[in-house]
Image 1 (tube, rainbow, N blue to C red):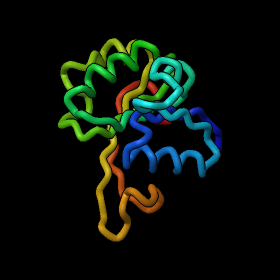
Image 2: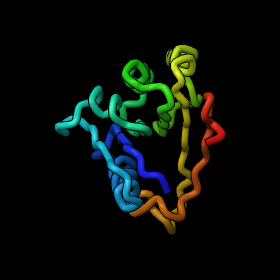
Image 3: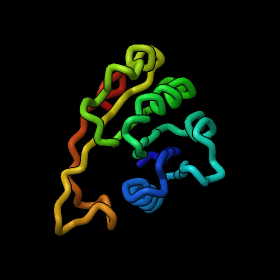
Image 4: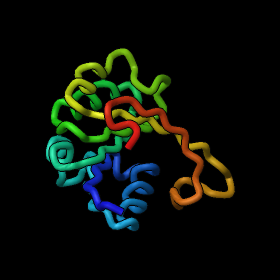
Amino acid sequence: MKMVKVAVIGAKGTVGRTLVEYFTTLGHEVLSVDKDTSTTLRDATALANVIFIVTLPIEEVASLISEVVSAMRPGTLLVHGTSIEKPIPQDIKSIEALSRGVTFCHFHFQFRPEMPLGRTLFGQHITMSIYGAKKRK
């Protein structure tokens, strides 16, 4: 498996902590971003191959995604799992991002009581929607 740099924005929350642990266990380099981390949003976004946004409040996600997209490199994957109603809301400038070579992915966990998300991603059921040039990879 190819190792990549993964940025997790919202790294100290329940989902964020689980993602950090999961990708670290798989051997990927993880850049943790949260309110009190030394890694900045802009630095992590510029360095990462894959960026996960799992932060609250939901009302601020569109502006956060727009900020992240402005610093992303072509070929980068942006994944958000912030429980917003549509995979790419109207106020996210998706056409601009897609034209820059960014691939979008929205994920949603299908929680199961016997496998709480706070413990592991292994064995979880996840629904995904993918948009962009690299969606088949």
